[in-house]
Image: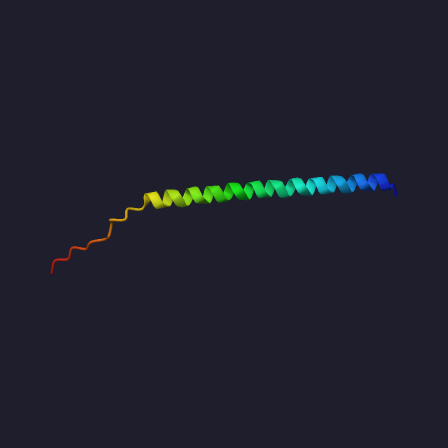
Length: 58
């Protein structure tokens, strides 16, 4: 078994793994931003005065 080839293969595997981790980290950040934007939109769509008063005639 060639030590240089094994070292190169291991190095390539480590680089591939590092790239995968960075891509997942970036995607997680993107999803967190999207979730924060969604929560902000939902807060803006709420009408706080609706349902505050009830008129009942008996």
